Image (cartoon, rainbow, N blue to C red; front, side, top):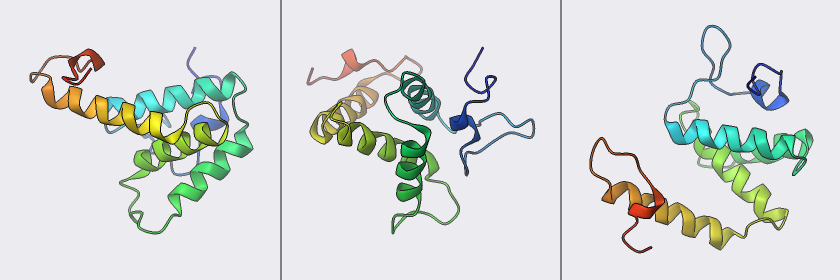
Length: 123
């Protein structure tokens, strides 16, 4: 059973793009993975619903964000990263390093092949 089916508060996040049936809609696989990671961390007690809502809300309202919500999942990842750093789980430099490594891996991966961190030429 998915977190969406169990009625997770995260699945009911304000602004979360949804289908006509009410299911989350993700523009890219990474957005679904960020969502799943957040649901998992919340379920494990890493942060409360209130903490998550405050972090996401602050990021969505940060100056420079799009008015049409097209950067919603960028906000999601930034909020999750900030929350993990604030909790001392991962520091901002570690997170940025992994983001850069995934980007290099994506650029080095032939079209149609799965993107794997091992594809980062600097690893």
